[in-house]
Length: 171
Image (cartoon, rainbow, N blue to C red):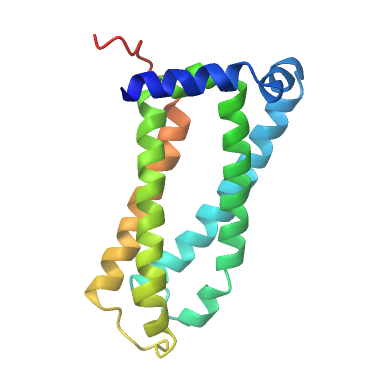
């Protein structure tokens, strides 16, 4: 049933005007790759500092200072979301039938849930932290989970062209 849904989405996307434009504009894919890389740099660069501070490292930085990086992280995620959707539209069958891509999507959802937990439970507490405050175990768990998930997301993105293709026939 899930495979049938995936294939119907692929059919709709493959017949779209957006797909035809992406496929026919030879210059577009490299431009998308560049913007995707910029998005990754903003997203992962900012998260690296935020998460390492959340885990108790870089104590010279106040937690409030790392919070100022959140708009940069969100901008990077937005760039990656837009370019990622356009990548999918440009080659829907390859992405939809790729186990590594599917794993990447599951991990991005998990990263989002981890970020929501951070925002709802830890962010309000961090306003009282200073450079000498030790990170509680739950903060360290959230931070290291974020770092681990995003590292695997990055690796999956690089591996999509090389591994993970399957026919979807159940074999």
